[in-house]
Amino acid sequence: MGTPSHNEVDFYDICSNFVHDIPLYEKMFTPGKAPLLELAAGTGRVTIALALKNYELIAVDISEKMLRKAHQKCAPQVQEKITWLQDDMARFQLPCEVSGVIIAANSFLLLPSITHQKMCLLNLSGQLTPGTKVIIDVFHPLFKLKEPHFQGQLSLLMSIDNYVKGGTLNHWCCGRYDGAQQILIANNIIEICRDGEVKRYPYTEVLRYVHRYEMELLLEQAGFTVENIFGWYDERPFEHSSQKMIFVARKN
Ligand SMILES: C[S@@+](CC[C@H](N)C(=O)[O-])C[C@H]1O[C@@H](n2cnc3c(N)ncnc32)[C@H](O)[C@@H]1O
Image (cartoon, rainbow, N blue to C red; front, side, top):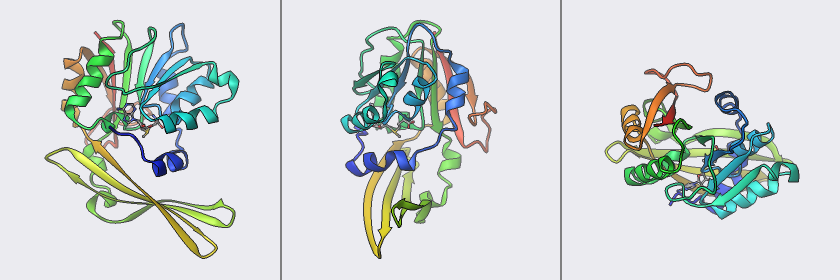
């Protein structure tokens, strides 16, 4: 369920090296007695950035390979601040109370069906103390589905010269979506061109996307109150043309 393939793990850090969401998490949560929880923490892009800012964290991810990469990136003094758990975000058990929860960068959409998404929110809600803040960052379908690569056009998303000595890395994507099933399929190819040779590393991501009021209902049914929906990480309100739907909710 949502477990990334070998190629996705190998190239995750290079293809997802953004940091523009981190200041929002720093603003929304203060380092405290109880750790923050990141679900689907991957290679620790958010977890490690926050640990470096003095937060304690519990980081859950289903993929052993992603967690191994995260470990390798951590200096011992950062490692001390993080508890890594290999588990399913729809079933995990917390080892202690947490002060806040983050599900970053569309990771919630990797839960493959509405049943799994409900399970995740109910399992989480059942383990939080009232008032705990939860932030879930997902894409706005109206914006995302219009991107040329989801209209069937093979698109170059990123190109890095000298990724390896004298070699270029290209990230291509071509996908499609099914509006009835609310599924987005992204077929990615990482291409490394060097010395006149090309090696290609494909991987596919499948996302079960949510609409705004559906997500609000899912959160409410699981025992949360939605306090805000931001359209971007600078806290601008969610609106028709927003790229993002960043739900800020509190456990009742
Ligand atoms: C797009 S990465 C996001 C990593 C990180 N949160 C970030 O923002 O860079 C998604 C992660 O979700 C994990 N994942 C997918 N399904 C999961 C599940 N059911 N439970 C826990 N982790 C899951 C994958 O293993 C992968 O590491």
